[in-house]
Length: 240
Image 1 (cartoon, rainbow, N blue to C red):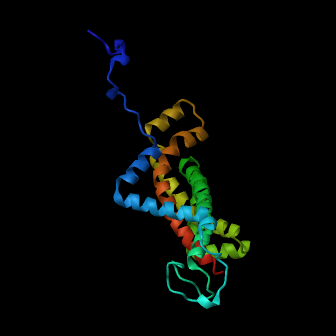
Image 2 (cartoon, helix red, strand yellow):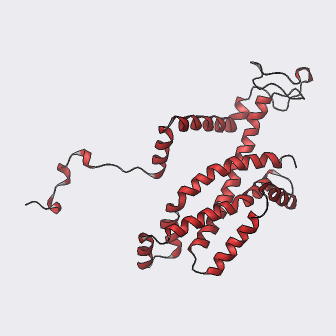
Image 3 (cartoon, rainbow, N blue to C red):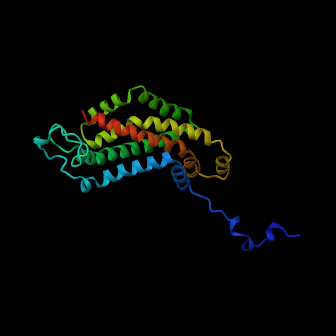
């Protein structure tokens, strides 16, 4: 009788060996599997290309004034028409996309990094008072309307794109903190976390290697949503 230990794996057919997909490969495959996902990916790709290569692709100087073509309707030469100063709207959109995308990405990065860090600590710590302090601070920020809080922070820091990024990032930090804390609370009791503790693994290693990777799914979803709202908040703050 042949035991499994004596099997020669080289004689097995290739179909027995299936290469597992990584997280990002699986996500991309599922995204491109559906027509809506493909359409969304194309739209996002176009916007990113416009933001990165806007100065090279724009047909006109976005600040060039020509009063003879004020309020021009969309034409082949001016796809989006012109504004009240005769400036090409399409060129201004291409230039503006870079700033909006930059502010949105950096603001959400600030919120995601800070909020996830606080949520990991609040959800994993055994000190109840530390959890209470962190989450009550997040509740205080939640008590204010997002745009009003962003305006208040921007007024305290002063005008500027960098300060707008910080203001928007701080406003969205509580959302990531709550999501991260909830994910950690659901993961911390899993057997692989208990086994890591039993082996004497340090808490920092457990958080980064075991808990954080298994808590990323809801955080990634929130990142995509917050990016859109951050761009809208940046547009609102531009009036102040």
